[in-house]
Image (cartoon, rainbow, N blue to C red; front, side, top):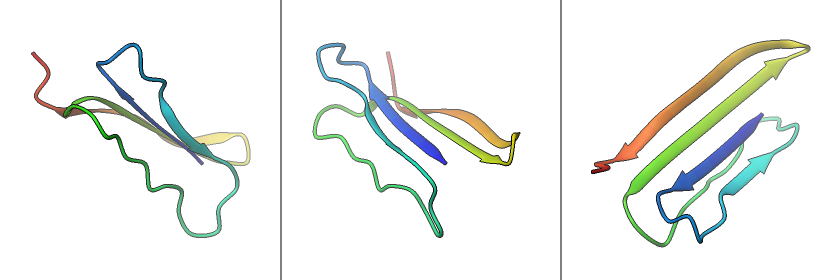
Length: 60
């Protein structure tokens, strides 16, 4: 499982949590802004069962 949270402030590095989890990955949070992108990826063996990007907040 891999979770990644990126915001629109390029000077702030992305927040990421990845590994083999028995229940869940995360939580991830940001201190600044309400505009960005969340990415989630989960594999079972070599097969991607989740591969998703989600826009977070109202980006203008």
